[in-house]
Length: 461
Image 1 (tube, helix red, strand yellow):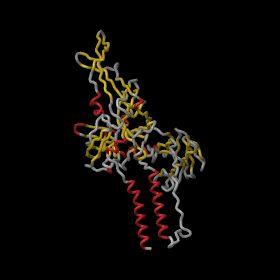
Image 2 (cartoon, helix red, strand yellow; image 1 turned 90 degrees about the vertical axis):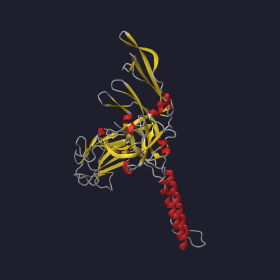
Image 3 (cartoon, helix red, strand yellow; image 1 turned 30 degrees about the horizontal axis):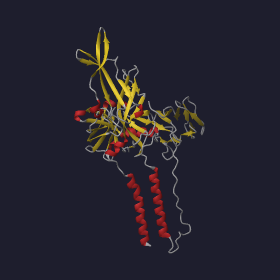
Image 4 (cartoon, rainbow, N blue to C red; image 1 turned 45 degrees about the horizontal axis):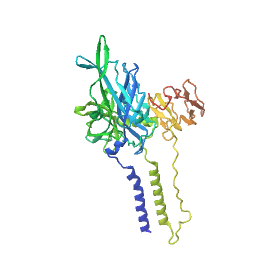
């Protein structure tokens, strides 16, 4: 009997160790490169001028599997107007093949010097059949990042794992910058200045027009990987005291929006800014900001393959069942005792999809924070019963104050019998358990207007 029990315990320990071994699998920098893409963004500014640029992005979602959700910099998919305001790019693509984007700069020659003029803006030529179109889902108003959704999954481009936080790193630890620096594309694709055969009218003169053409020769797999170490953790005052990782892994224009990863292949930051490329003063914003936004938007990330875990559960249950049968069986009977448990494989749970509804705190404890509403969200003081939990010192909030529910694509608000009431934007107090439909733009308050939310939909600026 003792020998049987010992064998059973050994088998059980081995089975229980399997999830740990599977979950702990890391990626090399070369493998992480499969999660990086090149972005083309074209913006028509308020004055009618067209601006185009390139950057990098990385995938999020089910780790190691193809994805359609990508993170990039805000400045990659926006452009500044003359008054300093930002315009969101109207055309955003992921470039898959070489020579999918060509830009031609034009200048006039006068007295041996070349000058660009507003009447001769750059010419942008894109081959959309070599790209995948994207929608901009979200642009952070506070931090330099944005969320993109490709209109189809990008072959071979997979989701990367996001680190728990930037400061899981330490000063002096090795990091890798991944992306598509424009300098790499400049090596063999720039023509140099050439006479176009055309002339620009200038009073009584006809000034010759010269062109400089550059084609981006990167394929989606041509990711540049550079390495360095963390120099310090600091803040960028020019960006509103955003927290950044200072590192010396080389980055240039075109790296913007690409991931900074640790030696396990986990994303710790988003490469954003280089102060002095020759002195390797480079900066990546904390991945913490991205994680928070994805949580509020209801976008899944760091998801592991459900089939792998189901298989582990099946194996574990089978092993435990076999062990129990082995220990408890009667000698020579070949059958379990009467009343022995029957082991069944658990069925995977169906998780509700994204409803598209969001609530944004306007005032009070949740001011400035944004949350997805999928299925049911309760608000109140009890952390065991609510998804949005108020601290005990916020006056007027009941244990369970109110409830938001999505039913057949519509959002409803219901007071849960609160002491001080739930109010609509016009001041109407809801009766207990009275459900009222809310639409984007509607406001509601808990106890008073000091704790107010507005209903919004999935998206950004």
